[in-house]
Length: 239
Image 1: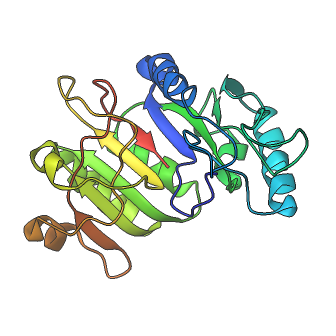
Image 2 (image 1 turned 90 degrees about the horizontal axis):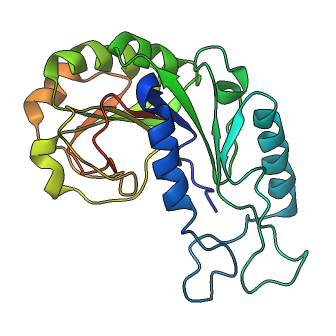
């Protein structure tokens, strides 16, 4: 039910592509079946406790005051295989902020449930790093790019705000399938494709030179990759 400490909560998208990314994500989220996880076809089960359900609903309400709905409204859902009113179910929720920097609710609260928020940004490395920092610390930031100069700017600026930086490239895309990660930054050329459904979490480092050049005493830098964007998108950031 989105209750993992590396789940995505912030999706920073180049402003010109924000609607396109929202539509693509909404399409994928509409295919998720919420309900009893013992039933075939169910992809999203209930939250763990009643207290967590109250906390997630309060977080969604706070976001709703500062964002618009892209998918899922406030998380209302009819759970498959569950009696009405039974179970701590919340449907997948995708919101959108008008301004990534000034939307305090986007950065200040981590909702421990199936909730993420889109926000536009300009695509520059410095701006991406500043937005990541507004989250006040993250377990993982994943960076997908074939632009080494852009990475040289971004990685040192992000390292102090994360437990780990994950670097990926198109060259190594076939080598590391895996689960979702918490914060992801894409800077990909317009002709590269990926899917927003297979972000790697624990792949081993495959480029020692990059790790050596960009490593930090306080932040592990893991270098690998995955095909992860659903359509050709440049400079897409999730966190």
